[in-house]
Length: 196
Image (cartoon, rainbow, N blue to C red):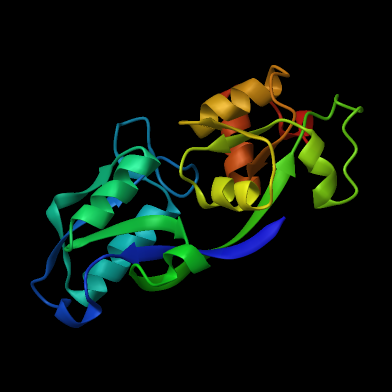
């Protein structure tokens, strides 16, 4: 649907960074990039990559940890705290001038998913999706993009909830990255082949 880059986002000036600098670092649960593992520890390749980057730059995490919050709250804290960073987030035109950027950390391709069993939904173009109810994640770049294009989007505060509603047939479509869709379906005890 739309390709962009997932980046590490800084509200602080790169010029003041360096040895001894301490930043509040925020993220959201977003498997497999960052998530709480069975021991309750923040894990994932995004966490490992950011920790390595900070270590090489001599920058400390405030409180010696990365803080996990829902997306909208983490984004709000980033905007309110000049000595903070947020990962992983989408770099887009709207956000470009608001922050200092580092990355990309990973490429990003957003797909529109439907239940495989929903043969009544046939999309040949992105425009075709405008006649269907789409679940969108509150304050996400994907939601903003879909709303700009004039899609009917019902907004929710959790991607897992959107996935559950899609699987139950209460939503027609949902945008998602491939890797995160696989993980959310796995958490629901479902195989990836239930969606396409």
